[in-house]
Amino acid sequence: MEITKITSHILQYALPQVLGYSQQFYQKRTAHLIEVETDEGISGWGECFGPGNIALANRTIVEHVIQPLILGMDPIDRDVIWHKVYNLTRDHGQKGMPLQALSGVDIALWDIVGKVSGLPLYQLLGGAHRRQIPVYGYGMMLRQEGIADLKARFADEALAIQQSGFVATKMKVGLGPKPDLELATAVRKAVGDDYRFMVDANHCYTTSDAFYVGRGLEDLDAYWFEEPIAPEDHDGYRELRAGLKINIAGGEAEFNRWGWRALLETRGLDIAQPEVCALGGISEYLRVLALCHAHFTPVVNHVWGSAIAVATNMHLLAAMPNLPGGLHPWEPMLEFDTTDNKFRDNLLQEPLNIQNQVASNNGYVALPTGPGLGVTPDRDVLNHYNINNS
Image (cartoon, rainbow, N blue to C red; front, side, top):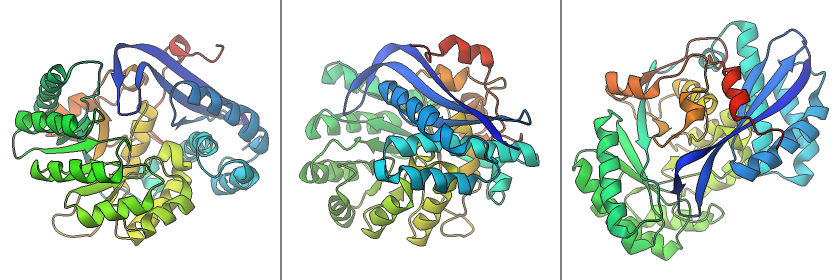
């Protein structure tokens, strides 16, 4: 079997309303899907992390840098392919977009291996430690509203997520320390004292401001404080973890095993959040997961993107060993974006139906059972939203 072609499918549409987080507001939803074709008619699907113009740049890397390196190679040799691409591009980027581009290709190769073997991804990875996965819903994005309107909307959205059956919820912050705590207080009041909620700062604080917000979140019994400071500030993460009682989460902006080794050795994370569509794909994710568990750091994958990313992470979470083991083990959760996402809900020939499963199964979803990722994009949807010719 030989790789004959790699295609980037960049999909985009205008959101019904502007959404934002601590760094920016955005008006369009983008997904960057990868299709790897072979001479035996078997194709694999993957996804690259990165919205908007980042996806356009990654398309160039996929089609004009990675594709020429691996055409004619056997897709089963995915680890050989990974190291060939990494070694020949490392002088030009050990992090960032080259790794995002490689991630989508690597995921597609694993999908091919599953289809060739007739096995779902979680079995290729060693089997399912859990057949059902708890799901948390994140929403409560920033908008260009006053604080009173934001507080009211955050409270309504948090309650709606809770009532939809999700096991927990996550909110965005980024207005500043004091108004951010007002938003968090509104969410806690809406969902009550016994419902788990988390706070995502997208690295907007200085360390001192992060301490201020973190102490306020402790009083609200928030479960984790995500990306409080810049991802490069490993010393700051260590200080926050040592000085706060709330769980410190992060890592979505870290890449490959070497970046993760440096981050984990600081002991700055209570919860690691690797992003498989960015850090180097499934091949590298498995090495990062092993590093996290070697440092006794539990993992809750970062999930952002289309149904391809969601399905990939469902398999990875199913195949993740308990850390530590026990009668009532600590369980990883699937992150689910509750905002408008046609590339998740409408992309597949057979939808994942996450929301319906969550509502009918006490916040849990079942695994895809088909070979590889177990999902197939609808060509009509791809063609409708494709901006490849732009």
